[in-house]
Image 1 (cartoon, helix red, strand yellow):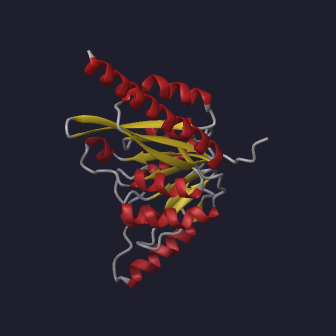
Image 2: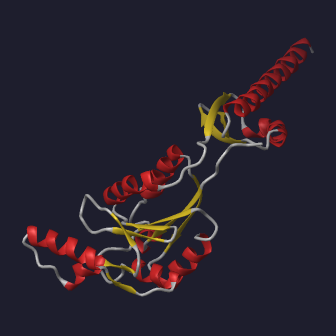
Length: 258
């Protein structure tokens, strides 16, 4: 009986600027790295425009499938920052100015001797009943409702919010990996590698082609939650590489003899 625990997550990256290419996303990779270290499997990522219906549809499609959903973007002070409204709609609750967030922001702007304008007050809006995600960079909090964690799109702020959130999450058995250099291209290893994967369904075997100096090679990565099982599969991958090498040597010898 397996003692492995699997915890899953999805990410929803929100913003027209991501889809237009104006902004190059940095948050997806950071979240993937941090979740992997924490033993949480990031299973799906969606990118949607600043459109309320699109955000609601995407959020409702994934929040029931995974343990956690993380969003980035759309909680700033401008008219197109509509993530709080969309998340509220998805959960069927009002979107309103959170009293504690209003105090935090009002005090921050007072210290900075800046007016707490209506636009800036938008950053205190969140679904009724949501809990705060602390923002040590620029004060305006993210929020949590259900299994959904809503965070800023600015990478520095997003990363700080992720750091605050991770210690509160349940985690699973970490995924381990074994990388094996293979001097042959995917066309040569595809069939035997498929057979190895079928023989070891408890692992995930990926092949990553490279082309250097007019020659194809491949990095093969065996992933699994048990060191023992990935070592067994890895041994078969190494044996496969050796079999291909021997086959090539025999073919070259026959050719030379002819």
